[in-house]
Amino acid sequence: MTSPSPQTLERERDKLFLTDAELIRRLGVPEKLMRPMLPGLEAKYGFPRKQALFGARRYWPAVKAWLDKHNGLPDPSKSARWQTR
Image (cartoon, rainbow, N blue to C red; front, side):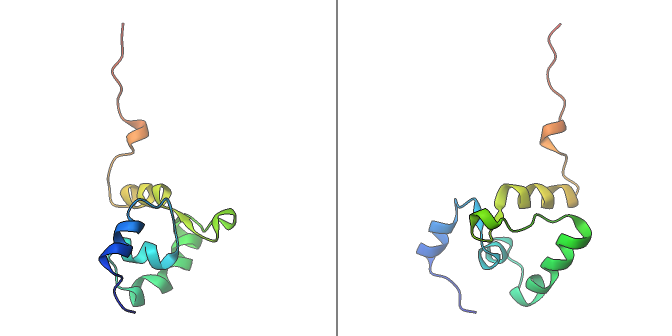
């Protein structure tokens, strides 16, 4: 696989729904390692699935949240909030 041009990477930067190739590039993991892992990550670990409605692409914010959770980062939706009394 050849590396995409800087212009392509810039266009992909803000996409919300990613193909597996775009996802793998964004993660920075070698394709030969990551592509075969994706089905197992979905089946065994709840990795975000492709959405048929969006052209069999994965929703990047869900992937990022999954990665954050599985790498020990706290869930921002469960963080302590300031309480008023």
